[in-house]
Amino acid sequence: MSPGRVIHTGQAVVDLVLRVPAVPAAGGDVFASGHEFLAGGGVNVMLAAARDGARVVYAGGHGTGPFGDVVRAALAAEDVELTGPADPGADTGFSVALVDDDAERTFVSTAGAEGAVDVARLRDTGPGEGDVVYVSGYSLVHDANRAALLEWLPTVPASVVVDPAPVIGDVDLDAVRVLLDHADVWTTNEREALILLRRLGSDAGGGDGADVATALATATGRTVVLRAGARGAFIARPGGDVLSCPAPEVEAVDTNGAGDAHAGVMCARLAAEEDLHAAVRRAGVAAAIAVTRFGPATAPTTAEIDAALRDGLTGR
Image 1 (tube, rainbow, N blue to C red):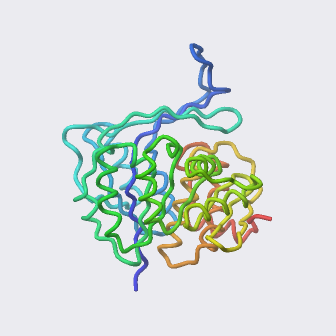
Image 2 (cartoon, rainbow, N blue to C red):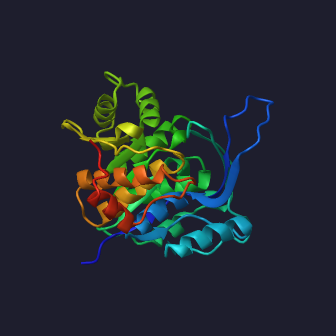
Image 3 (cartoon, rainbow, N blue to C red):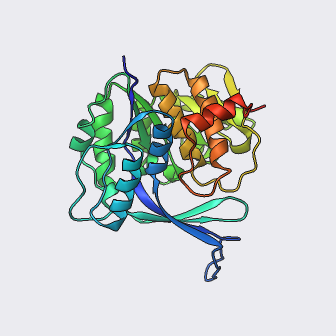
């Protein structure tokens, strides 16, 4: 039996990445020390999964115009499949990412054709039991995407991985609950996890990564993968023990796209029928490599991850 696919239902956009000493205060100005113009957003997750050997399908929208061309070229270079044609009436949206000297990133985004997906495009992916469907919280921001996703998810026989994204504090809580109802794995960073816990009226316990992961798994009834930066990741299941996946020690130069690299490689390994713990450990190595490189789409290849594992680049 062939491995399952990773079906990405989120948004592929273009990133204008500016490296700055610090984000300027309101009304201020700062010169960037460097810049890049690249496909980003959901592209980062898809490229990470594809580079680690997964067959990847993009079920989202893409536009007619220069930004759409950038996205399609990036996906084609990694053999990512598209489920529908370009929107003839809109281009793809873009995001400005400011990466400061502490390797932190701040975004300002626009919306384009990626925010107008109908349920037919999602159904055309034909997910099967061996597939992994990746869902982004950003889909809940766009009216069309939200309606299509919430109609489609209850019919999906595949495993569903949800990444709530930074917007989890602003989107409709009833829609979030639908995602929770159909998520097999909820993968999140600490900030997003704490926001969701507050919205659900739950306590984060002692406040460290393991406590936050446990609290979120208990509050949601879902398996939680909590990404904790240099401390690695924690896997928590409702009523179960917490598994720790320490991060490799590296010198980070750009954290933009690290969570995407982690999520993409994890999904690729789940689609290859690896267990969650092994998938998360491998994803941690991929994310560690990614943060040592400038740019949003810096996920390593299978060969690079395998070499890092052979050379002992694992968490302690």
